[in-house]
Image (cartoon, rainbow, N blue to C red; front, side, top):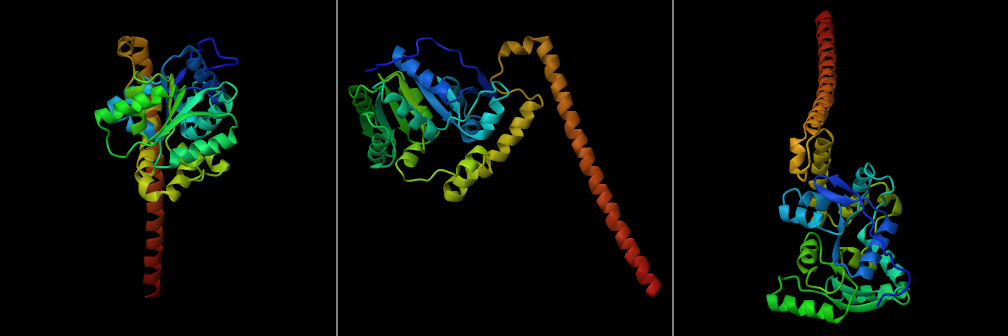
Length: 321
């Protein structure tokens, strides 16, 4: 049941094309208004809360790329995505899963939205629901379910769909880790009666009190990845130490004219677009060549300096001899 003021208008949200993934240019206020509107109109959508990791996984997974670009919202979780999205819209702010879950729960208490929590290890969803109800008095919990870590059979999956539909949920929170949760939402959005599915991953553990978030200054400066890497090095080393440098390199390539994979085919027929793209690539090559020249000059200067030192030392030894 939905009461109170709802959003009736459909607002077109611009997207920032980051390596082919269309990230929504939003802030928390826009996210809340959009989700409330979907519930009011009973429009089925899912929300991908996306980090650099999600962007990079999509570079070699066409299905995951399509899942992201078919989402109702792709929220920028991580300051690199926020900074890049601000080239599209200056109002963009970080909308991470942890903050979105709390904001939606607080926002929904007066509107009587019903929440279903799907995910987490055994016992985590129960703890999460209890802590959120204590923090958001009046929160309506429609149900909880912690799925097994092994793949579900078709019968088990159908049973879960019935469980969620019988709970009459408005929002299904999915916390089974990326990119598994994105695939699950895309596969189930048409089968569930709940109009909104939101994949929030580790937010289950954060709000259950099982993990501590990074300090605020690290979050705002784009260093939360370092905090998480130190906290869970064995699980996250590849995500951050491999994907982060690769992400920077691909973004630089895109800035210098290498078009992302989702460029419309008809853009290739636009001669002005082609000319502009070639100009950007030429400018990028010029910058790179200039940097190479500077580095080469610096190396040469250092080599000459070392040779001069060696020659002076040899000359000094000859005089002494």
